[in-house]
Every structure is written in C-alpha cells, then in structure tokens.
Amino acid sequence: MSSNNAALVPTEGSGNKLQRIVKNTLLFLFKAIIAIGTLVGASLLLSKLGKIHGKDLPEEYFSNGYPTILKLLDSEIFMGFVFFVTVAILIYTVYLFWQLHEVAVHKAAEMSSAHTQIVFALSLCGLFIDKTWWVLAIIIAFARWDVLAAEMSNIIRNGRKPAKSTEE
Image (tube, rainbow, N blue to C red; front, side):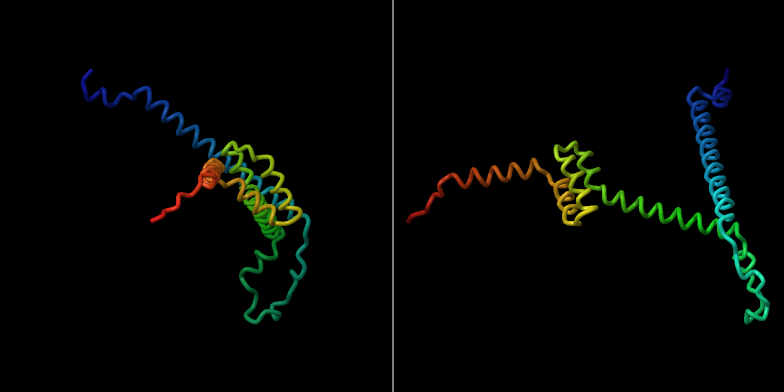
C-alpha cells in the first residue's frame, strides 16, 4: 500500500470519534425534540384553561384600524405559551434564589468541613427566622479554620511569653 492510500484509510481512533459525534448529535436532537414537545404540549394544555374576551372589538375601537399583533394576542395557544414561559421563569428564579441560599452548605460540603451540619442548620434558621443566621453560616462556611486556629495559637503563645523590656 502506498503512503497516499494510507492517508485515506480511517484509523481506529477516528471511527470512535465519529461515533461519539453522531451519538452526541442524536442525543442533542432527542433532548431538543423533548423540550420543544414539552413546550408545545404545555402551551396547548394551558390554553384550555383560559378564554380570550374582547375578540369582537370593532375596528373603530382602535385609532389606526386593527393592530397586526391583535390576531396573535387573541390566540389562546399563544396566551398558553406566555403563561407557560411566565411560570417557568418564576420557578427558575425561585431555584436560583434557593441555590444562593444554599451556597454556604455547598461550600462546607465541598471542603468536607466538620461544620457542615451547623452551616445547614444556620442556613435553615436564616430562611425561616432571621437573615443574620444565614450570614453567620456564610462566615463559618468560607472561613479558613486551620489558618484561624494557627493565628489564635500564635497570639496565645506570644501573650504567655514575658515581654522583654529594653532598658538603657
């Protein structure tokens, strides 16, 4: 086999790479179809919950005739879509606030801190009682206790030694 023909023959690694690309593309398409199907299905289901009133407004009601967007706004399916998007945004916002609230717990768990349980308890107290507890949980979670302990030991050790006075 010549060197020109060897360059045209695919290697074992390129076949695996092609299979991965095809697999990832198909997985992405499947997820996109599921997401779009969920969006359309939820919009259709939520459109059944509402009724658009005022579809029979006369043209004289508007200063320049019927607005072009009126047909879209008179559609129950579009209003179902708007309702779905609004609810999704509200749920996502609540999720983000919860993630922000739990940042101290995640940091303590990430550091494998011995204070994870107290940080969790203080976070819950901050949620239901007073935000001061949440701030205390943040301080405990993000503090470097090894450095603080070493510095406190140095302060105590230096305080126990008698100060040398400089007499002239």
